[in-house]
Image (cartoon, rainbow, N blue to C red; front, side, top):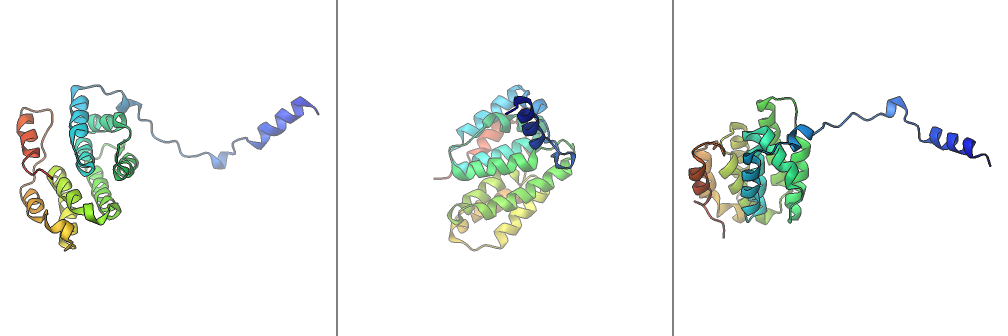
Length: 196
């Protein structure tokens, strides 16, 4: 057995054929290196949320409000303790980490993400999912419309208990900035509809 012939045979067997070269995946280094206080604050807010639906909504809102801070927080957050949240985190990473810089496309992608996550969520938890999405994401018109559509198509008892609060959030949507002087008011508004 010739060792050189064996090496050449193995190398040629596993050689990359130009047609099979995969499209390069985007690099996230520029987002992963963001170390602003906003990233820390967003991570603290996410980690302090009791419900997995709320953690997901906060992360999506953080990405839509400030892409570099939100994506950096998403990458640093890693894995969640809840199964559905981990599924949602994977979908967020696949959908919302974009380099095109177009906020409109980002909002449309987030709207489709809301639709997917609603369908993927266990029916008994869909009410709290819509509540937290309305609470944090109603300020974006496309997402607000999607939450309205989801709310209009269901009469589930699991959603009905949250319907008045969801409708209130959808009627008076606001996009709150986490890095402005209104931060204490924003945090206070997060506690106005506690979930038992």
